[in-house]
Length: 190
Image (tube, rainbow, N blue to C red; front, side):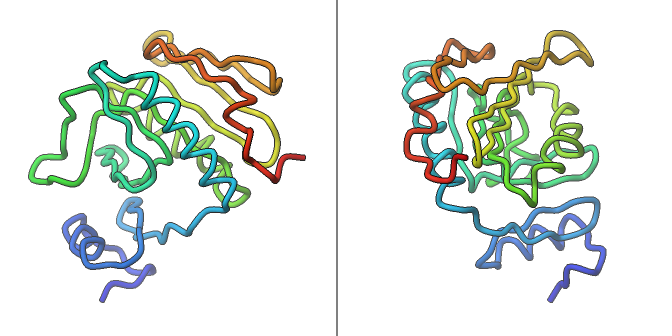
């Protein structure tokens, strides 16, 4: 049995995760338990995935939510983003059938315990993925979305949405999302 305080190899982590009833991330040799989210966190993830799935119907993309593992070789990271879009054909980590490597779009619903990590170290790791070009950070406690779009190598443009009447337009693909509709069933908004 592997404990969270021991450094583990990637192979040990993957075997551990395969046999676990819980989800775990892997950060530079450390196994990290991924805790469950709030109902509003789940609502926002599902709503976004639904908008994306509907908006991308008939296009060469796949939408994944919550349980799809992503491998980032540098800095040796396995994560489960809240929502991801991958262009077809999806690319898998060599030797794996359960781990993707080529997202073009990732969204994270912010929680009090993960928001700093999602904005900093995780975003830095995501930016090392060649196919990655758009990132959403969705606040579950107030209407606020941080929308990052890659404009050039090492250059990202931030647009902040905090008006419920606004419409967010994704750049990676032609999808528009009503902020009010995205948040319509979220109860914790202040």
